[in-house]
Image 1 (cartoon, rainbow, N blue to C red):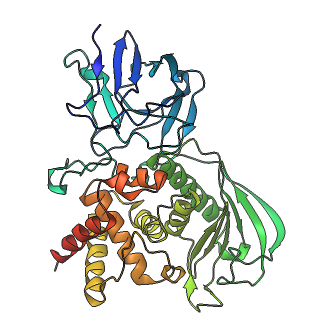
Image 2: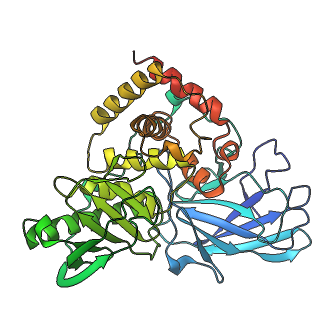
Image 3: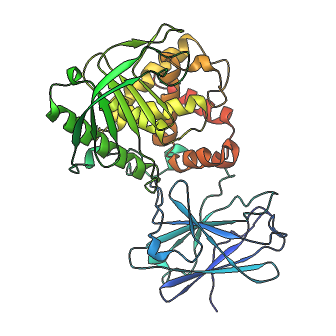
Length: 411
């Protein structure tokens, strides 16, 4: 029997071996846990996704291919229980179809409280006959290649929401409701009551607004349809297209200020509610920023804002190079004027929020990771497991040192 081995030549105890055999249109996964961190585990699940490639994330498989008991996981993955075939031996058969070009997978034990496996693998089905060996993906605990050795293809690094042009049916109805609660429910936010006389909704987004803040129903339909496309784009980009939560937005066309910090703000997201306040026209870019928060993509306080700012700057652009060049140049200027006293990744002070300098530096670091080092997948892993070293293979200080060197070369 020819097994498609997904092992490296030298495996550490954390590298739980997972083998794959292509049987017709199905892939059979086989895992022996003896001598690994999961040697005492009584149950295993295969965490898997399909069709990833260099510079592009993988996707959750269609439900028609799910083995019994499969459940969705964040970041475009699913988890399927493996059958215990003997002491320390687990197996699972996964069906495929012609749309499945590769399978990305790792194993874990839902009940095991000890160390976890840190290696994931990819089986490229299109090359299975010509090269009967699955390629082991780079271990998440290992060092990543230098940015200069990474693929130059930009596909998958940016949201590319300009591609999303679906038509949406928008309905509008009169209402008479007053939002008495603090906007965002925090003392640092405007607490004045706001009365809305219109409500519009489409597939996923509901927008409460005031009739004097828009030029007419056509404008409302346009911005809501744009927002729906951005929301769909972002769920695809971040691999959470399965999400069923729907945002409710409240919009006023005026400048609002924090009563505590005495600063202007344009958007807030708390729970399923988005609060938007722009002194000029409705901004879909601000909506994109707050939708990032709505999706609960929160690796750390600073990086959370940096990721939202990165989306705000790039979501509609076919070529974001110019705007990102300006972002990095501004970050270099601000960093030279006042060097950081602590790691951005570890920064966790409320005073960070609302500071222009903080947003610029965090967005620059996120853009450096996603674009310059092509580490979108590592960032998504960090969002999921909150362990920077496991996800990136580097400490925050090591990554930020390379980022500072990158900014320094721009002078």
